[in-house]
Length: 153
Image (cartoon, rainbow, N blue to C red; front, side, top):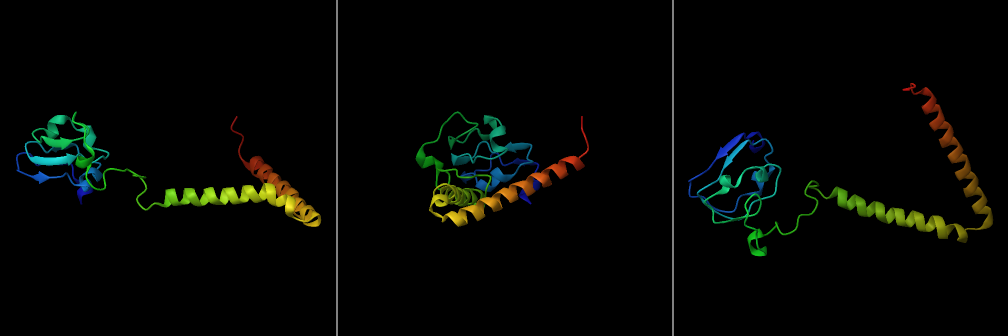
């Protein structure tokens, strides 16, 4: 429901406290006026809130952060605003996936280099023959696909 909000004028309403983080998630808002209230703390970072001029936040002496010239101290940032980690990734899958792939890549690379020398000679031959056949098969498949694609020259 808030996502469909087009304009918001809450000026001169004697509102106090922090600007809620949910307000920073509205991406279609074209007009915002929060001036002449008693708002405090850091303006939440979002797609739209920093695009409005300082006059939209005027008359709130305890408000800080962009687009205002007043920078925030650590106390003013408040809980949950001191560290921004993966703001686009709400469920943590990208950072978790990164570490999983990093671990798997290390394990495969390590065993590909050092594990190869510890395998018996016969097993090495079978593995290398399999990899040779697999790369040949992969090359043939890639060439077939390339031949089927229309020539774009």
